[in-house]
Image 1: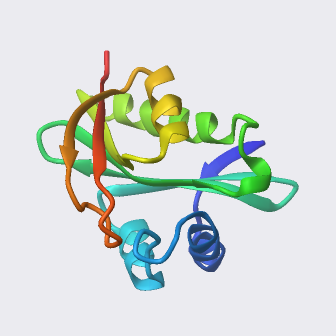
Image 2 (image 1 turned 30 degrees about the vertical axis):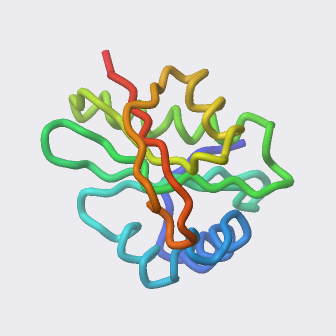
Length: 147
């Protein structure tokens, strides 16, 4: 598995992966995804195996030395094969390289697998946002301090 920066020609595939990973109301429109990927303070990495994109992650540099994970998407066939870990490693290293102090994200309150994944990486639940997602689902805000 190879982690590389995304390229403009990846956008359609990233959109299709996001649509496959999340239900409408949680998944992004193509325009939203393009805006996140193209933002000057964002970085997007893709996980690629034999030319096939298995997943991707978008991170955004916020004020006050914070990195926000916008989304991490891994195709179902590639889950539990360390793809998410490799993508998170890339984002966390970028955050450290930028001298950031904190990295954070939101995850659905009912997504226990994601919560466990983040907790094993050192993320802590710090806040709850009711009706965060368009379908009314509450989100946990999870953060990790960077050393």
